[in-house]
Structures are given as structure tokens and as C-alpha cells.
Length: 237
Image 1 (cartoon, one colour):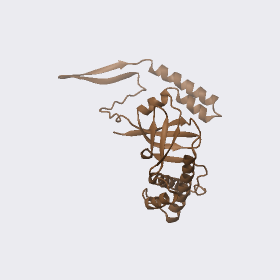
Image 2: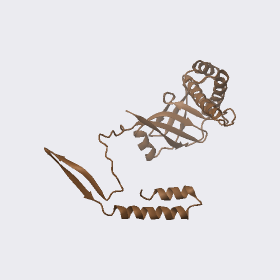
Image 3: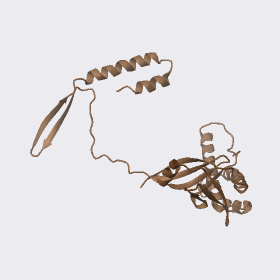
Image 4: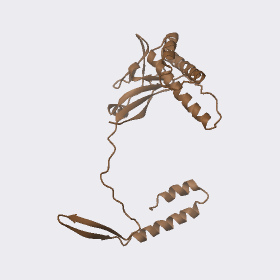
């Protein structure tokens, strides 16, 4: 079944503790090092920085999942940088200035009742902080699964994944000519077929009214195409 993701903003109930702030600073450094490594060695595949992330996790003494997430983010930033260069857009190499953290669902736990979040810093070491939880947050959390936590010094953003219904697959196609004053068709029954005509005498009057309105809006908003296009699009065609 297909799925979709959405973001849920949660405000912090208190300032983040020092260990988490330190982890956010290290995560920023990891992303910047991953960006430089991928550009220097021309790496583009998703898992091309896996071994490099293992070494960074040991050097910075953080959870290996945080290092892998940082490398995936670095590759994503490099991808956008290369795309801009191909299009001839001049730009600098991506660089993260502010501390932040992207944590996968395996590295944290959220208590929706109390709003307490336990975050893994490294193997066997955890730190916690609290976010404000309302009935709206709990209702949204009940309808999906938390996949990622995006943390800044001022707020926390939860990335939720939930299944969406299958796209409707039409079984028949019906084409209508909106310029006609009648709808013509064939009614089929057992052993016989009969032509059917449904008159719509007012169709031409309605279309003419919309035509006059669109032409008047076009003259009135000739200096502002954006507004004229939006207002004209509200008239029937």
C-alpha cells in the first residue's frame, strides 16, 4: 500500500540539555565532512559513504545511525549542488552553519502521553527532553508512524508516515461536449437500443456569461497577469 509523509511541529517545553546540544553540533560537523568527502571523491550512490560514516562515528563517539543519517543528508545536499552546476547556476559548496540533528526512529522514543523524548547519544547512553503535546498532536500521532525526528535548538519536528488509499482506477471513460445544447447517447437494454437526447438549452447562455466575465477581468487586470489568471480561472470554461 502506498504511503505518504507529513511533518508535525512540536515546541520544546524547556531548553535542550547540554549533551543533546553537543550531539547537534557534532552532527553538523559530520554533514559538512560528508559533503566535502563526496565532492572530492565524486561519490553519488546512497551507500557510498557507509564506511566513512563508521569511522566518523568512532571518532566523534556517537551512535552509528546518526552518522549514517548525516552522510545521507550530505549526499542529498551534494546532489542539489551538482544539479545547479549542470544548469549553469553559480553557487558555493553547501555548508551547514547551525547545529541541528536528524534522528531515525531507531534512535529515539517518544511518549505521546507525557511528551518526553529519549534520544540515544551513543551505545548505552541516552538523554531526554520534553516537548509540548496537545490533543491535536496525539490525534495526528495515532494516525501514523514516527519515522524521523528533526531537532533544532528551538523546536522539534516529527516526520510521520501513514498509508494512503489506492489511487482510483476508472473502468470507463465518458467524454462530453460542453458546447452542445443537448447530451446525445444510446440507451442499451436487453435486445434493443434506443437513442436518448437530454436537452440543455441554457448551456449557451451560461457559457456566454462566463465569457463576458473573463473578458472584463482580462481588461481590468491587464497590468497584473497573476491576479487576472487566478480570477479568470474561477470562471467556468
